[in-house]
Amino acid sequence: MNEPYGPEAPRPISSTSPGIMKMFMGFLTLFIVAQTIGTVLFCLYLHMKMDKMEEVLSLSEDYIFLKKVQKCQTAEGQKSTLLDCEKIIKGFQSIQWKDGPPKEQPKFEMQRGPEHRERAHLMHKNETSVAAEKRKPVAVHLAGQQSNKEGSVLEWKETMYGPTNSLISNKEGKLKVEEAGLYYIYSQVSFCTREASLAPFTLYIYLHIPKEEDRLLVKGQKTQSTLKSQCELQSIRVGGVFNLREGDMVFVNVTDSTKVKYRHGNTYLGIFKV
Ligand SMILES: *[C@@H]1O[C@H](CO)[C@@H](O)[C@H](O)[C@H]1NC(C)=O
Ligand SMILES: *[C@@H]1O[C@H](CO)[C@@H](O)[C@H](O)[C@H]1NC(C)=O
Image (cartoon, rainbow, N blue to C red; front, side):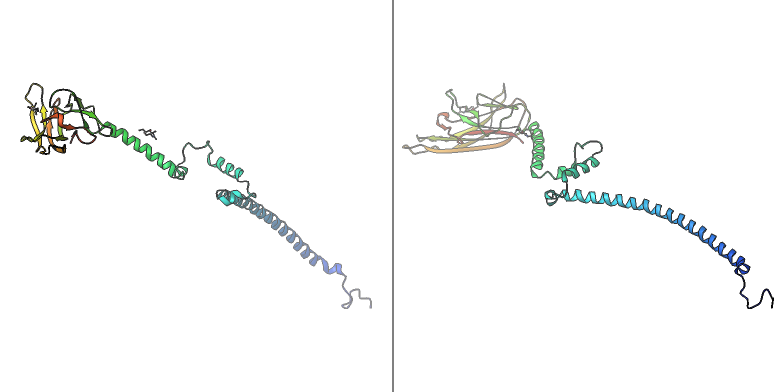
């Protein structure tokens, strides 16, 4: 039995290994190559992922910052010592105002409250009052003034609240209009008489045009008192609308100017353009 290669004799490994070895090596190479490619790909993926993560992280940082700003704007947040509100708000403002603080912020304007609105309102009112001054009504109201001059024409003075206007001048009881137009003229005269007289006490409003005869506009009358012991106070009121030309004058005269009462509110003359 010198069969070198008996069927039962174990085959030396070397005789069968080359095929398997080759296959094994092939697999190993393939595995290593695959591993390398995989690693490279994974690294690449990881890198990309890291980039994204960084972005996400910075975004969430921004979000946290905004959240802090929001909290700092509440009263509670400002009390919290955990937040450095002053710094946060400053940081926020520096982002907001890249070109320096704004000159006017309408949003804040609206938050200023009633005080500011009141001031704005006042300024608006002043503007309108200026406009009103420009178109000040042509109106005058005067109070009767006792004069020691002879005559029946009554004289007038300015009052505390009665309007005056440079377009209506008052000279010796005559009111002169400087602007033609339609005017309402009114007057009241209070008087008291003691002696009985058949003639009534009369109040006239006359139109005086230079170099022309005076023209009666309106008149009012009252029967004189018959009481001898005391003065019976009476008032006559008249008024009407008239067309006046530039330079026209109106005046008031009465039956007896010595009987006229000049206590405040008793006797007056007014005129205004309608
Ligand atoms: C409005 O006008 C009055 C006087 O007419 C003045 O005293 C006041 O200061 C003015 N107000 C403003 C906001 O200008
Ligand atoms: C009032 O004035 C008119 C016009 O000037 C005159 O005619 C009249 O006599 C005067 N009346 C009295 C009572 O003086």
